[in-house]
Length: 289
Image (cartoon, rainbow, N blue to C red; front, side):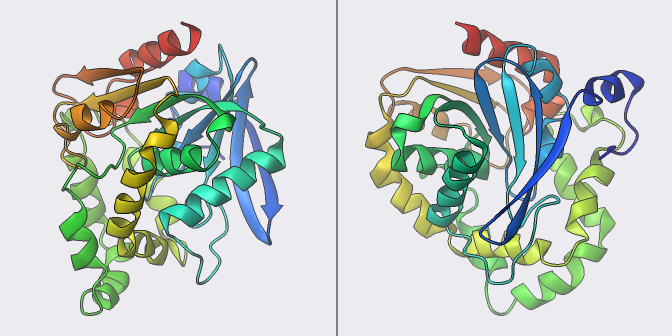
């Protein structure tokens, strides 16, 4: 897939990326693959998809075999009706995907809700993950999202949100720009790239289903963190993150025996988009260390 308004340089990099798909339990998974070396799995956040890694995947592929997946319900993967969107179920599907493509063990990079998915998957099968890279991962010590999860998924507001949200372009742009520490860093085509899969039927239902079980999933995750305490971990945050509280980073870090925390000053929730060169350098140094 050619993403909207790519620069010539980005288009050249992306020409080396394989567009792949598979069917697992009757659901189509779309994913991308590039590079050579130790396998690295990239897991997007809520309402994101492999597009989130358009600046990271080509750079990371210079030192790893990189897989960027669209989780079922998001991006251009299938949207089965009634899919279980609990943290436990999504993490189980991620492990099944790894089985299907032959990843017995890998490094993994997850962002936001995808970071929580990664931690939950690793807790279920810690022997399958060499190192964790968690970018502003949703976690039990960030209060942001708790109230929203209850509010937006309520029986009163949910039907209204499902009806209006896909049509309100300005609403998408407002929330996306808030995720940047400096919205002037948003590259052309970003809004269009994120908006395209949201127009497909079932996208909003998927997001709301995740929010519906959000708080339950965070409580469960907290009890399971000791299972992954031994895995070397890199935590990355932006100091201006409005989605996942940067103050929760230190609390999360204390759950790991060997975790490094990197904070980008003045950067928001999407450092891989806002300061991609700094982000890619930080991740690459961790992977080759």
